[in-house]
Image (cartoon, rainbow, N blue to C red; front, side, top):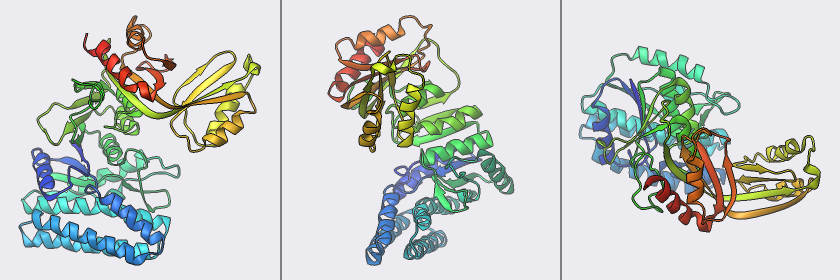
Length: 437
């Protein structure tokens, strides 16, 4: 059994839905995770905003526009009046639920509103598959996908609830379910905060011990660099879970780092595939390392570097703990950190509470901040025993002003903090030195 996930653009129109249907019916017994049709979630968030502002007429206008849009899709999608009628009836019941939830607006009801996008798209796909003779079964994600009070998925609950659903519908050609949405600890409709539908696919794959998790997008897998900045980039055909997590965190927009974890721990390989070119090899992510190789370079923008300098830091017990507690107080994560005997420098990408952080840090020393910085991350087998790997990366950066270097914290990356204005030169130089020689 495979778990296949398709995003909003993949099911963004009637022709795209038909294309996805051809892909997913080539094998039997797989679980397919679908997002809402492209643009729908944003529209539902806007509708919820109107309801929260007590602008009922504004919400009704957007709901009418959504109905018109979906009716047009259904006219193109269905040829059998029976299945078209089923889809239309579900659409109207969903729109009615949105309206009634909005009239009694609350944060909980807002989640109900936003969930309708995935519910509508999966019902549309299921009815279409049934129309063309496929034995498709809809598995409601709200019956098995659950998060705890901290917003973390409950994998034991997911496993114990999805398996009976599959057994009950054994023999189906295909199983359709929703990505992104779930139930929370209060048994209210909620959503997976990080990774969305990709996270859903990874969690399901881990729960059923799938043969493979496939993430279908309109991009040909991961690339060894950003094709918008560096010419002649190449798709990375195989990568370790840890390397993929590093790339995801440091700028590669294909897969959220949190999506890696369930699959990695369950040892279920993930394959990134291209809906626009289904025959392309894509990128395989698994637990099998390739020794002695550098895989890719990624960049993360909008970084601020904060330096705290204090002569009292020398051998001062508890200094770093106090500094870290300040960032913890403001729920601000640290990307990179470098220390000396008298100073510590940290980089962050969330500057929401920067002013408060600076004020609190000033009690421990002199604080300075560098803005408009960028983290360049070189990912691969960067184990310290691989003599010369770090030298190759350093040599590529010899003409680039480097604010910070992080090496040794992970066996899979070496990171450089540079000015954003130097990002393009840095990426091009690294590409030339690491991948063209």
